[in-house]
Amino acid sequence: RPLAFWIRYTIFSPRGAPENAVGELWAILFRGEGNRHIAAKSETPLSNCAFSAHGLSARIGAAELSDGRATGAVAQGVANISWDLRFGGGGPPLFLLPHNLYEKRFPAAKSLVSRPLARFDGKIVVGDDEIDIEGWTGSQNHNWGRRHTDLYAWGQVAGFDDHPDTFLEVATARLKFGPSWTPPITPVALRRAGREYTCTSLSQSFRARGDFRCFEWDFATRDHEVEIAGRISAPREAFVGLAYANPPGGVKHCLNSKIATCTLTVRELGSGRVERLTAQHRAAFEILTDDRSHGVAIVA
Image 1 (tube, helix red, strand yellow):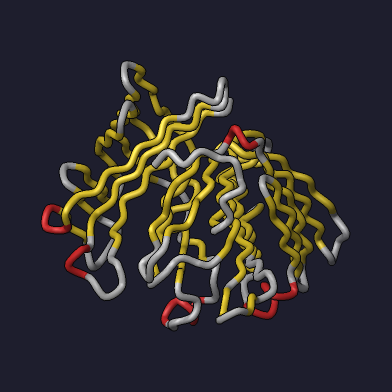
Image 2 (image 1 turned 45 degrees about the vertical axis):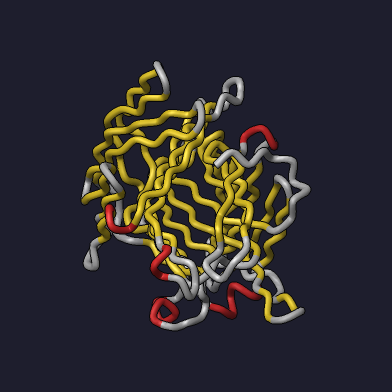
């Protein structure tokens, strides 16, 4: 069933003006049946926020994120979303970059999956509708940096239809240096059948194939053990448009879906064994772009 939620607690600090930093609270409920998505965002003065220096705990106004608990409410126009969720379980953190790059200036934006395959319980209330969350599988993620990546697609699958313990994290990014763009950089990390395949080194990521557009994305990579190829796609109506302010200035558009479809082929090079996996309406797919011709309404 195409039903999913996305909640984000974050801090936005414009370059050169830290006194204007704010806490941001975002929430989306994706309802693919009838495309009745609801999205909202609020901003809170930093004086009414708290962010832990030693973990992922945060408080933005009355909304709180702690180890295993997320509560909050956000209203924007006619959109009104509140939540009270507990989460736990899952595997160890999964890294989409080589470990040494997390301490370096490059790349300027970094991410990791702090809790893949987490289980969520609780409720989400949208207007007069209350959605019971009972054992939903998802993840907790952490993103940070001095600026947004210039152009990217990001995807994640927290459990495939017939392979609930398989977890995929993938991105294709291009960076701009002056007038020049890098070729696509595509790191891929996959946990499957007790194994972890991390095709995330810079050399692997540059050699990998990644080609995305609105609203399809094909990618492929390999190492000495495995070849991985996949496609993530969704109709335009499955996306919600968000305006992401960039710390150096300007605004990017984030086209956000959590009800996309992913097909994945995994070929073991030693045995020749081929496995095909599908995640229907349960893949994350985001595109960050400066292009304004995508046709997705920006609602938050």
